[in-house]
Image (cartoon, rainbow over all chains, first blue to last red; front, side, top):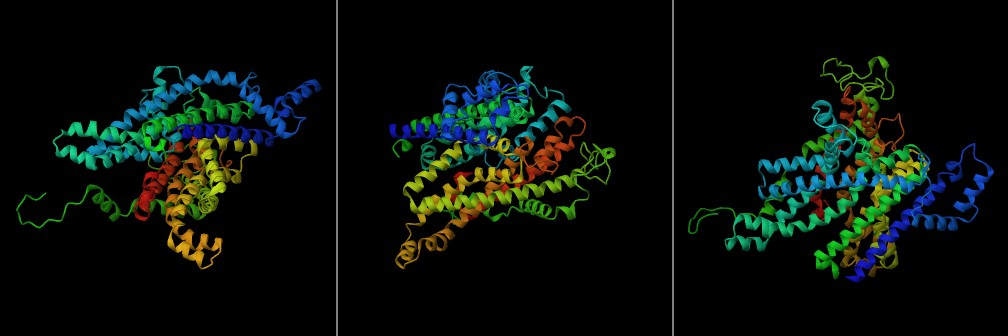
Length: 305
Length: 299
């Protein structure tokens, strides 16, 4: 168990290091960072100060060291557009992203789990069909397009919900559905096939044979075992919801990290973009790590492998 | 089930799982296959099929609705966009972009994946360790983010997009090929080939590689949908193949602020993406059940 955990943590750290290296190389490949920060009105003094603080007069590996050192302190330089530390800008945006992520996650569980169970138990019925359609749409429709279609239907045509922004409480409904649909579909599919396998297993047959009621078979004997793959996936989901937010926040003008990343991209705000990417990766890697730990805890086969 | 003692001859009831599979296998996914064929044909022959120039329009014709809506004309079956360009022609040419990007990306990604998978599985040891850790790291980095960083730093071009997407797809191939090789290399025919004095490249390509092909085909079909979605997401975010080339993702983005005035600008290309990806997934599922049920968990 300890060895397994150690390996996982090490991998997470190496991943972060790799991302920081990619970002460093890319930021240098993008051009001289001094040109990014300084303009025609800057003095030679500014130039020299920046050269020293970024270590541009030193060899590349030392520059990377300096970059890494300040990144560890949360210092990614000033956002060009905002004129203040990138980290500050990011922290302001975090609550909105977490809020949206949680809402989407809730949607994916509320829709995916019951529909998954029902479509397995009532296989071949109308409910199963509905489940199938929800799953197929979720896995094939591009998230950004799904979002726009929701806006068109519920905001433009029906005028039930606000089309974008974060002013009202109801503003969160459409982006959460758009973001959560894909994962609802995944939950549904996973749970359906896991339930079908379990319902087909020897111990469920035994339970039925000894006269356990249908409800008890489904809820006690089957669901508990079928939930294991769903739980793992739920964990992975938490991480990749972060990425999904890039698209959805852009579509719905939701003022979170994803929108910030795209704005940084559009405005060539490299210092801000690299900070956002590091923060995103950190969240992603942490979520994956937590899932691995949780999974090892739930399923002893992994612990001793 | 027949009651005890009756003489009615009945086929033994099949276990649900087998019955389900048999039922699935009998049906060819005709509609998905038709849509995929349509996708490929329009992609390849786009200039011959498209009724208009996809990149040129007249301002006089802008925001025209599809032919079946009020005010639509039969000249522009799916309507026109905000610059008066024919939607149908743009969707047709968009198929071409998606098709080319998907084909090149999968070719490159599969090449890298197969090469590293073969090497990792066959040689084992540190080569395996290093390659598989690289795969782990790649899978731990959110693809779209990585792509955005690369595009901003290196510029927006077809080559960059393909490179970015190839980086995104190769790890899956590498991991699965490695797994297959690990099994195959313990087989008797491989030992025999070794005894007979076959060189390592010969064993890898003549004896082992054919055993991997099924897995590859299935994986590739399942990955096409992912690649098309990724490509369209990138172009929606403005980091795809540069405009005015009509890519489905950027077309959806064109219509974003015009939903109330001209809903078809966003809707049509999105439908095209969904139809293609959906068909690819259904076809891939079917192929997987046919060729390689072991891949089932990959889903």
